[in-house]
Image (spheres, rainbow, N blue to C red):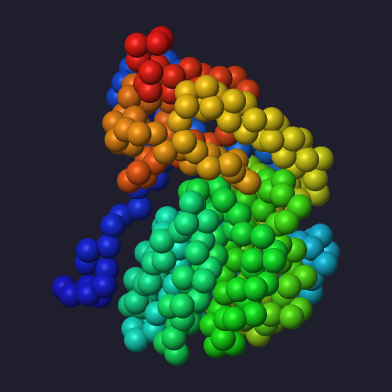
Length: 359
Ligand SMILES: *Cc1c(COP(=O)(O)O)cnc(C)c1O
């Protein structure tokens, strides 16, 4: 058998380690996972009721158009229904974008480090991936612009960026969009937008009026706490949405996910309480990290990118032995903001790992 040449050496995505695996392997009774930017406060209580009321519905195919959810999200955001596309997580929207816009002979531009799903899917489509190193964790927008040519089809802007937690301001984004040629689609991945505190964060939906080559990605996996159910959406002109619908599978978002997302969206009080708790958690983490004298970037998200002067894989392994699952990158670790108690335990473990003599 002969698979597509571009997939033969593709890395297999390595998810954050599951809690139960770690407990079993290391014989620990308590394990805290701060590896995948999941919501430590769960999800809105409305969601449980919504799901339980739908259990008789399982033999029926879901609504392929997500009509009810579409109307709710459109009204929540102030956009038209045909300016939305839903996906099995926003991960699937990345797949749809690459399917619809990339192929051999084209190229796509992204920051490094950024969300790894962009690169993987671009490579599957056979496009050339151009990675532009970030500056202090922030996208080098001028550097990215300098790489645009007539073969460029998609530019990925993760804002705020995963894994660094840094943000591009509206002024910077507008300056960038003014210079991107019309033939290039700009993807603004806003998976963490609900966590952003900065006043300078772009009002990207308003920018869609002026910039027709823009698509915004959002998700129910992060602040809404529904990662297991897989619901994300894209906001773009009806013309772009139409292209994505052509490559979308008919029933890509399941029925329970649609109902849960609808119930979650209706509970903005839950969202506000998570924003508040996360802001406090970030302050708690900054204070602890400052005490350890370790370098990190200030974050507009629910995670912190930390750059200790030691091998990140070693730190990952030592934290794991203490029952804390984090994420290792080549030159940094990324830690999700947990509950106050989880953060405390994480910081104590990090203190033990980074300053073993002091503890
Ligand atoms: C978590 C994450 C997503 C994926 O979200 P799903 O909706 O769960 O697929 C997309 N983009 C970024 C940057 C993320 O961190």
